[in-house]
Image (cartoon, helix red, strand yellow):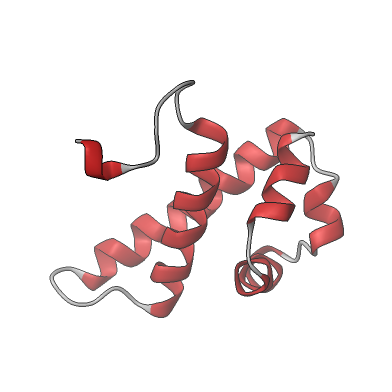
Length: 92
């Protein structure tokens, strides 16, 4: 399964709707992206997270920032976690 197909299946409808609103990519488009395009999309969403975090300062992260954060975490855990690394933080 390609990275694009993994991302499409991984994300919730709300997350897919966010990507559609921000970038114009519907689920079918996401599912057919190349690995480079998925990496670019991931980085663009991470940029939103950073921008919103900086804008929030010591305040609460915006809904846009929270959604970007959830997508970055989901994709990062699926595609970029080192081989064999567990997702269970309780073991740390």
